[in-house]
Each structure stands twice: as structure tokens, then as C-alpha cells.
Length: 355
Image 1 (cartoon, rainbow, N blue to C red):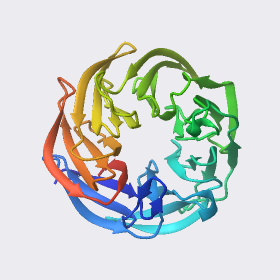
Image 2: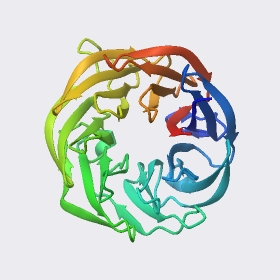
Image 3: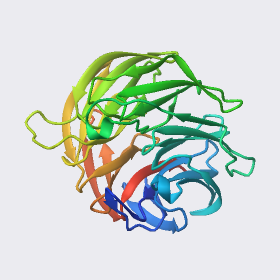
């Protein structure tokens, strides 16, 4: 059967913004013919494993334990064993509410962002896939505006450049994308020159993604529901366009969550919580053009992902406990619901892996 494996991160415990009721990391199979998701297993162990990453050889999964600073946050390493996951070890999160995680292109380091305390951490991966003690820790400083969410730094994502030389960290609290030079031999992080790109005030940059051409990048701003398009060259970002993810006639409060680009680079999608939609855009020569909005058939689309072939988009509706699949119509960029919905409690990270 032609299928892909989908790993789903969740909330297992209550936090100020969610009543977590899930039971760990869920594993599903995606039928690449129909778009149906089938439950395979779930791994009970890591608490609030909200965001997930996989190594390049697809042997190990790494998960944030998203707990507040007084509740000893951690980063977990797990080994893939068929359709199940087995715990290897964990390391201290070195900050509160770790919310985003990635593995570098060599498969030798894991990087994590701590939202509550506004810091980033790098961990070495041992030969058996377990995590070693942190090789780098950087604490962000300052504030972005007088808004309550911008009185202190809140690192929200860690995204490596395609060539593995630069790390980009959108910080919602600072209205900045901080840029670091990444040493793939040692795991060291050094501020780049210039050390950051400032967004407009009150934007609240959340997630960041590169265009497959490596000539452009996009930042999704949570607090004002906008996308900024950047020209990209060797660690440098130059803004080209800012565009809203919400319809002009809506009175829904902005609360963006995720952004993704199709593998062919033709379409960009962004999720709107509250509006419960996916904003659709075409992309050509540095400009996004709005195509419309698709309802996610659930509430609070916290995360979504495009499968590696670009055939399906899989969205997790955090507050209605569902994962829904859409088929991407490549001539138009439209999203067509497959009719398949699977119940997963509090889905907040969707990680598809080509089997």
C-alpha cells in the first residue's frame, strides 16, 4: 500500500491556554490514494509533547515537553520501532514552555525554542540517538511593545537555512527575527551580522519558512495575522511584501499559527485560529496573491503540514480534537476535503514522514 507515516504531537496536561487530555505522541498512517488517516499507536511518556522533529535518517523523534518553567521542562529523544516509539532519554529544557524543535541537516544536533523565557538551546545527538548536554544556550533580551505579550522575549521557532549555516528565530515578544551563524561541527551559535531583522510593531512573529528555491522566506505574524515575504541571500533578509491572512470583512481577532509552502513552491498556506481557516496564496517572483480561505472543519487549527509529495495537507484542530485531510489541487491551489477525519485529542503538531 502507498502510505506515509504521520506523527502527531499533543497536550496531555492542562496549561493556561489549553485543557490537555491526550495520551502522548500518536502515530497514524496516511493512505496516499484516498487521504484516509488510520490510527496505529500512541506513546505514553513525554508530558505535553507539543512539537516534534525527526532526524534525516528517520530513526529518531525529538519532542518538546511543553511545561512552564517551575514544572521542569525537558526535551525528549525517542527511537522509532516500527509503528511505535521507545524513549531513549531526556535533557533539561533550560527554559519555560519549549514550543518548537528542529534537527539540523547533518542529524548531529537538536535545537529548541523556549517561549515562556525567550531562549534557544542546542543539544548534541549521540550515536544511539539520545541527547547530550546542551552545547549552546542563548537568552534573548528586551521587549517589543507595551502589549502584555511583548513586554519580554518569547522565542517561538527555530528554523535552519537550507544550507545549514544560519539559524532563524522569530521572537513574538521582540518583533524580531534573530539570526545566528550555526556551526554544524560543534553546535555553536553566534549572532550574525546584522543580528536580527525587525518586523513592524505589534506583528508578533511566530513561525518562519523558506521557499524551496532558497531565494525567499516567509514569516507568519501571530498577533496581527500577516505574512511578510523576504528576499533571502546568504543569511540576509530583505522585506518585499506584507499581506493579511484574514478576509478584509472579518471581525475575528487575529491569531495565526502555522505557515507552509508546497514542495514545488507555487502555493503558500497559513492557518488562522478563531477564524478556523487556512488562507491560500499563490506565489510568483516574490509576491503572494490571495486565493481565498478554506474552513478547517474544526476549531483552532494549531498546526498543519503538507506531505512530502505535495499531495495532501493535514490539519490538526486543537480544540475539537480532530485531524482532517485535504487534497491539494495543483492547477488552482484549492484545498478539497477528502471526507476523512480522525479523532486525536488536542493535536498541536503534524509531522508527515515519507515511508
